[in-house]
Image (cartoon, rainbow, N blue to C red):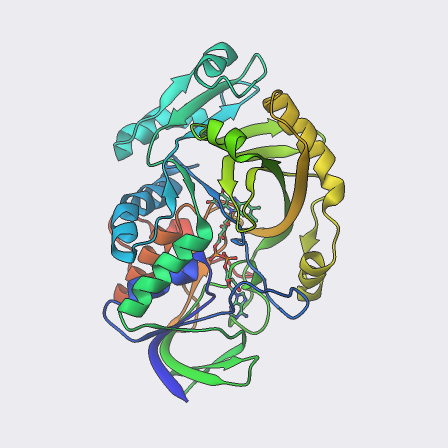
Length: 396
Ligand SMILES: Cc1cc2nc3c(=O)[nH]c(=O)nc-3n(C[C@H](O)[C@H](O)[C@H](O)COP(=O)(O)OP(=O)(O)OC[C@H]3O[C@@H](n4cnc5c(N)ncnc54)[C@H](O)[C@@H]3O)c2cc1C
């Protein structure tokens, strides 16, 4: 049985970052399957199977903002050391069409405390003047963050993290964990493929699958739901003409949809450029059972969601050609406090890093760094408060 100082479960954004940070002073195995080619053969999936994720710095509160800021500050070195480019600092625009909200109200003090800045846009006229591709309703207000805000490429970010993990002699094992047990002070990790690995410490970073299989001593409080995005295909010329378009977080809330995010056209592996828009919809599915998540990824039909996303996109960008499009299915999970889970369970040496809340791609590098610090030192790094990331278990 192979033995490691630390085993990280889940080769997603958070797991890859955590493993890399741990690997600087110990032996580490990052265990989790790669993105499946055939969804019918996979038993678990992920939230990162895509080419772009919004990057902002000013988050919903200080904890998120610290994570975003620390992640973004690390990107230049991470790109340089790995030789992999994943960060596109095209800026990020946040708009609320109904006027000022809590997020906008707290930004001046949050920015001042953390040494950040954002440009305020007090009405739809100034927004349209600066961002002529977007059309917002009259009462809209917003803020714009310049670089390092923009978007990141999640698959390439994982490649960069694992490349550095391997440089540090860490290993990746492409297997799915079915059970973790603590036996005589050692963790024994059992895989679906029939192998067992042992370690001194284990950290579960299995994203929306954290409560499935036997990965934890006690299940966490987590709401897991479906998510659908629309990819609108554009020609290369059309895509390049939008290369200055910032990422958009648009706080619309109607009976049809809520909370739009949009990313400029990006080149996908099939050689086409797609602009992405996504939102919550009332028909989103809430999952309790692994079989229901598997059914969602394998067979559910997301095409019926296309029309309302197309309509929303047309209102936002009336001149954008909507000739060809497709929908894609995804999954997210939310914690009761709305922040990631980072910490140790009631079993010494058994840690958790996860609970994405829809915003953890942009700060996964920092979640990994904080998690590794907690596992190493038993305390949070300066500036971070453990309470913010408290693990909340079911039946507590
Ligand atoms: C449509 C969509 C749009 C989003 N947009 C944004 C955005 O713009 N900006 C942003 O910051 N965030 C965004 N997010 C959220 C972001 O993608 C997630 O927060 C992020 O992927 C979470 O990283 P993670 O490592 O916790 O989970 P994941 O990326 O889901 O990775 C979890 C990993 O665990 C593995 N795993 C699961 N179970 C097991 C097991 N039993 N054994 C071994 N491995 C296992 C999986 O294979 C997977 O690789 C979006 C999410 C979705 C779905």
